[in-house]
Length: 122
Image 1 (spheres, rainbow, N blue to C red):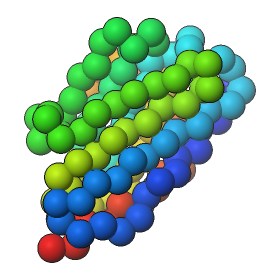
Image 2 (spheres, rainbow, N blue to C red):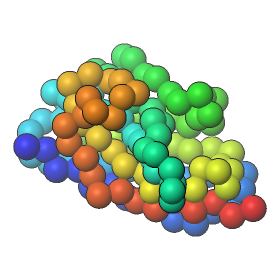
Image 3 (cartoon, helix red, strand yellow):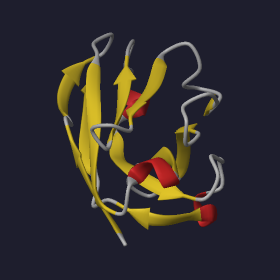
Image 4 (cartoon, rainbow, N blue to C red):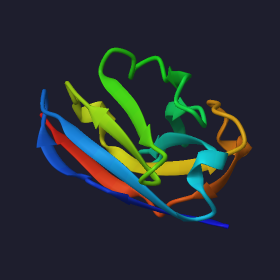
């Protein structure tokens, strides 16, 4: 079992930045690929970014490319998401997830955090 806890959400004005963190406990997180997803009210869950076990591969959703950066520190069992140039459409609950491969399909992830709210005002 892996427990995931997100932090770092909050409110920011358009154009601003936030850094989300995901702390993992339980099994060694280096065994898992990890990802970030988000869900806005009334919308489906959306892929944000993913990173492979050894951090040698990253992938991003189309609207996040060039603005968001995903990191992980296996020694600390953490994964971060640096979000820059935030826009109101980035407002959502952001979830971290762990699974067997780094992929945009949320169904491939086994473990999920409870989420952290990000609100971007115009």
